[in-house]
Amino acid sequence: MKIKVCGMRETENIRQLVELGPDYIGFIFYPTSKRYVGEQIAPEAVDLVPTFIQKVGVFVDEPFESLLEQFRNNKLELVQLHGNELPEYSARLKQLGIPVIKVFSVGNDFDFTKTAPYTGNCDFFLFDTKGELLGGTGRKFNWELLDAYTGETPFFLSGGIGPTDAEIISNLQHPRLYGVDVNSGFETEPALKNIEALKRFIATIRQNNTGTKRSYSDYL
Ligand SMILES: O=C(O)c1ccccc1NCC(=O)[C@H](O)[C@H](O)COP(=O)(O)O
Image (cartoon, rainbow, N blue to C red):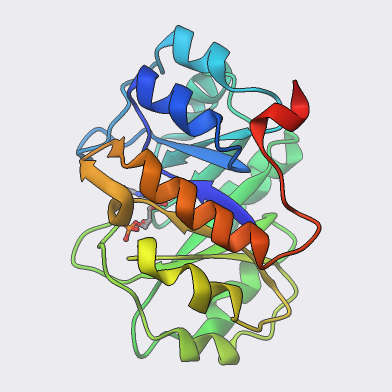
């Protein structure tokens, strides 16, 4: 089970998170977000992230050329499309060799066949809770709905995941469940994560997923 921690910004907090060895760190490039990292992640923070942790840029309906510029300037490795981007947008990124996570906002009436046009045009889906605005809601959707997802593309589970959810997530059974994405459930304030809570969460997930146990020191 891969772990993505999203909405990071502060250099010292990033340094502490890196020591926990998550698989992905997400940075929000959406100016109206409380977690907006700015056009440029602090260069000293970028340098702290080792190559085994992939940097994900989260964008919402960003003009294509602007996204490319920010992708390159920030040495990002993946792009997360969190808006109403069409499959063609995602396909253009793929053609440039940029891995893509496409987000779907899941409400009780979500039709999982909506994901089909994106198959082959992105690498991962991310199923998040549907809210009034685009972006994190801090709330879970009904995870039983995932039974209706029979596609091939692996997905991240997201939306309102918090410190007490590690056990239940470890026990989820879905052939395409690839990882979890956490954000506001671990924050002490927007863009600042509670490292101790994340440490316990990551340890529990990894203990329950034999073979993926890992710490930063393993790579030094
Ligand atoms: O978190 C934001 O502020 C945000 C704003 C606009 C687009 C995306 C945003 N977050 C992206 C994420 O991947 C979140 O982790 C995801 O939505 C879940 O958030 P939460 O419910 O707070 O765990």
